[in-house]
Length: 431
Image 1 (cartoon, rainbow, N blue to C red):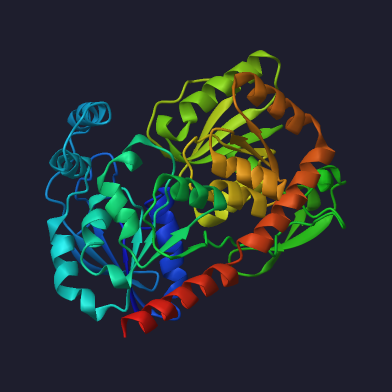
Image 2 (tube, rainbow, N blue to C red; image 1 turned 180 degrees about the horizontal axis):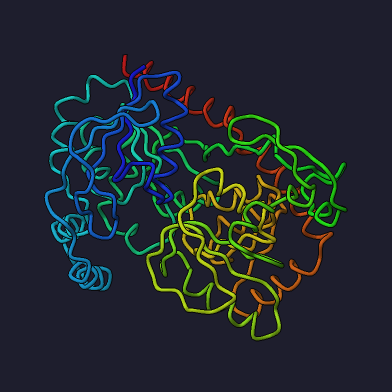
């Protein structure tokens, strides 16, 4: 089967939630199908500046076709226009102008899809918000699937999105919370829908010893040094003292970290709750809290020069897993989530999460998975973090619960099976 994924940005350097989500699904399905991604030349979602080369590329088994955007975004002008349109009566033409100013505005992508859509059995659109989805869904809705990655924000209440959610043959949600939100907001929705999410790889084999019966607890960190072995990058056994092979030791040594760690990973951006996170963590330290806030990912805001805040940078997949295992707690501060891969990856590593209670999705993960706590304000953040840092037994229990939750709900075989069944249904319907 030939499948096209349509998404606003795509690449191994792109860390946005929906874009990363799209890449994970596309790469997994490429083993069974002829998968192509139709996207723009943008790497940066702020300006949509053309940075990738136009044309076809091959990334991890997936053919990627890039099309140049017609122009970059003037973020200040767009913010002013957004303020006006969200607070004043306006027309559909005004909303289409807002969509164009938001970007990415890529007529070449839409033109390609218009002329070539019949060569694809299924079209999968990621994210409801942007022009490639809004305009692309009009071309062949009966072959189209929308993965909306939606959450409560002013834009979703614009009239143009009523058409977006009603057009596709099917909707695939990330969580029950997202599905409930969309069903409450829109009356005219496709009859075919499901909660699918994304698969998460559970770490299976680690280069350090685990304490029997307590696979996710750090109890082995205090074991006396002794000879142990691990495989290096070439697969050859090397001898290390056991204290250098304990959970998270590699990441801690590399970044010279000692004591408890509160970890965040992703775009370091006020819109992701990072500004509030830093403020709340500073209050925790003022009250005598002993921990280091470590931020990994792409830095899109300045960070205060404080000894208790460390920037780890953009990490490889292997280093990211090491960071998740080194963390005492992983914080998910964004109030706007449709899935939160960070939360699921932390849980898969057996590390408890501390989530923003303004995100229904994060609360759902904490409650259904029983793998973390959530906070609604500064005081709750401080008290929850104090509790998680000092209570080893609680962290171990939450870690085990989180791993079980991911294993039962976010295995790749479950996720891909749902995609396969939906693809077959759409292909059968169109013929």
